[in-house]
Image 1 (cartoon, one colour):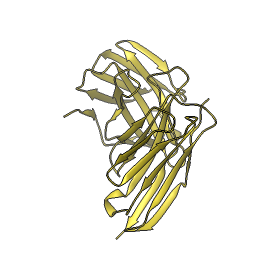
Image 2 (cartoon, chains in turn brown, red):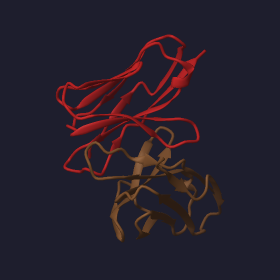
Image 3 (cartoon, chains in turn yellow, cyan):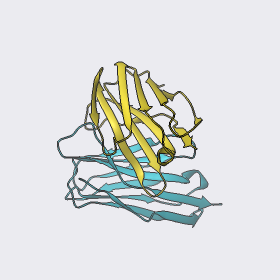
Image 4 (cartoon, chains in turn red, yellow):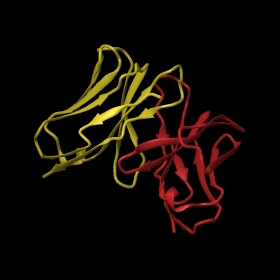
Length: 113
Length: 112
């Protein structure tokens, strides 16, 4: 059974803290993604990675960075958390094909106070 | 920037009713996917459509891809409480095989 796991389901951090969100997939997928999901705004792509050490900005990369040192692991970093980064963060992975689905983790609900 | 507009945003119906959710764009997509997301979980793929005019059925769910590959619909027959969830359409286009553009979703509640 394919699986994408995220390090925390709920996280509460203070403004200015450095925050790490970890994502691991066990499907040997090349592509990994970080989204944030907000009511009324849907899923918005923050960053994605198509190979180890390779990354590209998504639609809303400001205030975020990523790291992919191993194929199975993709980390999202908030260098200095702000209250407007309070959100649900979803990680996903996929293969390259047109028909290939994105497999999502359960999400991390981050609250920045 | 490609955009996908979903309607309606919210839908609350009684068990046994039929419903249709729409996903529209001014852009052409090479393929379109529908996902369902339940509370506290990530989205899960329901179907992928790739050919203009394509119709796919998944039990009580019928998915259609528009002839021009700019729009899609999801029709549910005889809705059940287990159909409750957030339905998301997502399109691939612009030469990208990896990036999905998501609609904002339709939150469906089916009351017993």
